[in-house]
Length: 288
Image (cartoon, rainbow, N blue to C red):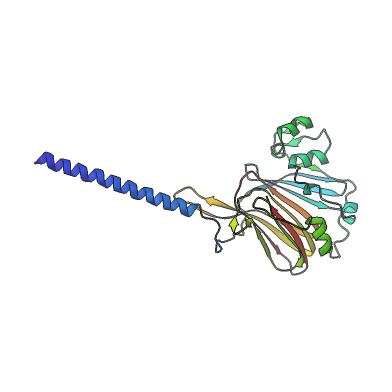
């Protein structure tokens, strides 16, 4: 009798464990479904930047000013280019418009051969390019600054520098733009005063992409450009996906190029808005 009772108890315990395990597995599956959801319309856009940033190098050469900004501790990097002097007056094309050039390629192109390449920039190079350059790598974190003795501040500051809708569309957007799931483009050549949001969304679906390229013609005033990424927050089971503000920068009067480059694929968003009560802007945005 006692043995039969013990057997019954053991069977009940085993069945209970199995039931709990199945229930737990079901909860995990449901949790995974929630975690893998795409961005929702009501997802909050934070205003605080989530990643530490530091200026790795600033280079001025022949009317082109480049800023190389490292984000976090992985491989995220932002390259910003603006024109000054004659290059600005002549509306020269930006060097970083060429998508074939990595941040390493750009740095090597605009600096002398004896200049060491910061390690963070060198990480963006292909093995072939790194070897062919014969450049030494700067392993310690020291900011590189190479300034142009002939640098002049934009003399158009007092005026509103406007390239015009047609010129912006043809020169900066390579019109007509034609998007695909892996190359999503937006040409907003009209002068805007309201906020503008562009997303890696195409054909009714969110697309997980890595690089984001932008250029902005600020017509007086000041415009803030914000780069967002849809990422997981925390450690399971206390985690969820949400928008993170990875980097933001304020641009004033002129033409500005800003590329956010990374090896991480996810849904992305770029938000532009004026931070002053004056001026307007034209913009181009590309996710690929």
